[in-house]
Image (tube, rainbow, N blue to C red; front, top):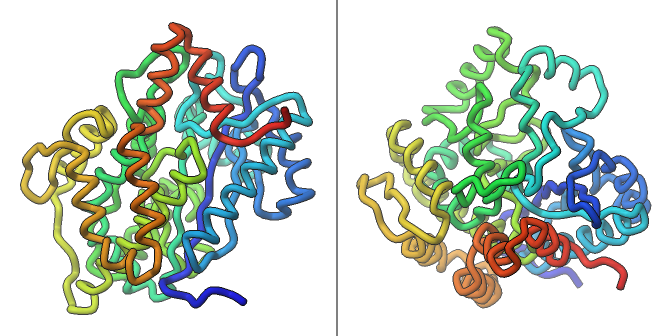
Length: 371
């Protein structure tokens, strides 16, 4: 018997890199892994922009437990499929070792248009994110929820930072992917929208100006989905483990429900200054959980862990109402005790003195492989 639906349905997309188990370098072998994985996952696995990446997605889920089970299953299938092809998959926001620039791009007419338009931006696009879709079919409501979510985006970056290395060096950032992504013309935190018509009008302007290949290249960190009745939150590095992805998705869904109360009261959301949000992104990307974050409401620095704990307390009543509180609080405590993916990648390297150790750590914890 199915569990009763206690919150809006939600789903997750996770992006992965394919690596050589010996050299640990990223390889353009994603298509072979996808072919094998489709025997079990069907349409839940697909390609990405480059031949070094692949993506899995869950079905719409009613509970965090169901979501976690689907994420775990997909990663297990990827692990077996990759091993059968003599490669491995890793969940990291950026490549650890050198040798991925420029990446081979997946063939297709749309990709050709993208290369012609965006040119060198594709050269450093070997980055991986996790996207959360929360069911929200009313687009007018969706853009107002987006307004209310904007202040939380830097904290979500802090929580999921998992890209400390880039092309064989330590970037000095916990989330280097966050620094790479906003180079695209329509990316990063979304603007404040007064209505769905305001959103649509801005998108039409970009399309008319030739800024976008199509609606799919609208890369704001929150956007109403073009293909599903959902609001998509796209701000985070892909976490190392399925548990962390499920934790992140649970917090995002709870935030959407929480801010919905303000929308119901007619509150259009706080008009956070774009320049302050940009600085908060930078601070979160640099420090992760290990330092301080910028409170975009006050302009003051606060310990990053405190920001995450505040977010959790904000959504605690929603998590409790959804029946998710015990599961999510346990996951969050493990993350705060063990550190972000960035911290754990660096710890592996520090213990061995070798960047290969970061890749080995990722291989071990991303997906199980045959012994």
